[in-house]
Image (cartoon, rainbow, N blue to C red; front, side, top):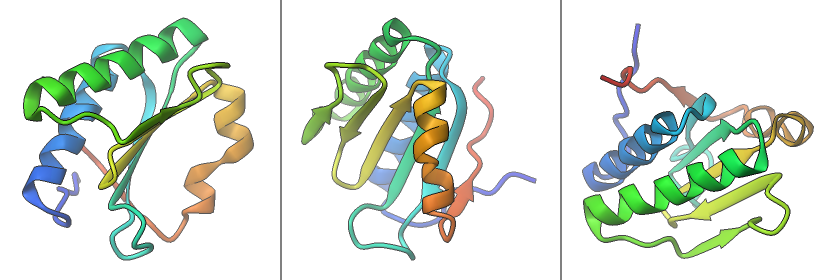
Length: 126
């Protein structure tokens, strides 16, 4: 059973979907969206995925930025991690995209750290 995103503003929910679709378009793996609205005032959602190598991580990050900008004219507040490409963080204030290499994702285990957050399922990409 799919759980629709039902919190946050409609614009934020749409942006999260656009970012998730961009990740899937570039073959990002193990996509997880955490709804943090009841857990922290810092942001509404974490989008977490894995890229298999630094080139794919860079491609995913570029696609997320391009698709969100195209859909809403929104640029990230900051982008971090482009230097070593083991963990790229794209901060859009209302949601944050985390793109990891597999070992880095396992080490930091954000899903475990934010275990109180509701895990959201997005509809499969058409």
